Image 1 (spheres, one colour):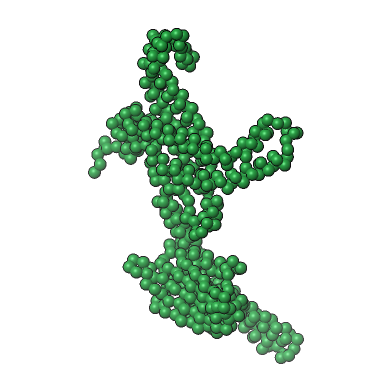
Image 2 (image 1 turned 120 degrees about the vertical axis):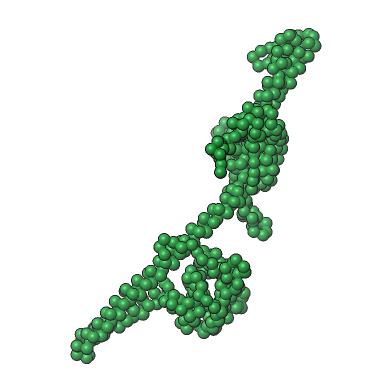
Length: 475
């Protein structure tokens, strides 16, 4: 049992302030500690700041050709009156500069971002993931991925900020270091004879006696240099982390898990609503239409056969029967009763019987599967068979469905294949049907593969995990 005097979590996080002997874990904590100069952080920050100066100068040298057209453009605007500027030349220079920035800046920003993420451990703690997505194979896939993701544009913004920041670091640290050196050797400089003098800000030193107090203060300037370096490095680290570091993998996994659970709950709610609508139509509207048809039939018994009234009632009864058939097909399309009552094998057999194209069904499903898996598989097969007789002109089709063991601790997998012996050449880009099927399968965590070479056959293969989905309050 913890002692009542034991520090809490917040106290432990702030322990470096209460216990000066504890080593600060970040540069920011070190800057707030009175023992800042006794830790390694001032020297790490100074090394980072010096590196920043060199990286900034190198970046300026590399990027200068890219920005040179815009420098010329700005110089022409600044040195010549507006009414004498050549419009064609100005436009050409601006367009060339824009093209060079768009084309070459990512090529500079990407390696710069990788280099800066390697320097960040000097002043802050990781992890330092880039936030870039894995590109598809090929040069064009790499270019398309890198130019359309936010991480690249943030790195380009960082590259634009680094050059003025490096200039500021150079000016601040250079001025402080020069002042400390001049103050330290001031007595030697003014003792050379003649009329030597040293300007120290608002003060001018002309004799060794006047320079000695400043020599004694030179270590204080070095202390200011170390603190200034720490502050600049901390500010640099904040900007670099915001622009160059993507979310940690653990955070991405947590967000993905939340999205997956949310998606599963939506799917469960959607399936529940489908079954409710099917039940309401089957037990409500359809039954009332059947009763109406029976009442019309009974009414005809009291009418003279062949009379005008009899013909009108017969026509109304025929329309009611047609409406019943249409409603029955609609109900079957929403959620077939046979799928709920007898399972996927019987539902697939019914689909094959109703398909105008001769269809062979082969199933190897020893047990009932989760309702969301059966529903997805059923509608995938239904859509595939609809495409077969509407678009392919095939003379035969085959449906195979079976389960495969997922191994210890993993759910089984339902494998569904629909094959038609048509001309082939199916392309998801030419229509939304196949894309919709793939999206429907992906929602359930499954995969869909399409094989449709010219000349056929066309084969759709779907794999669906048979694990449960989280329940919703509706169920």
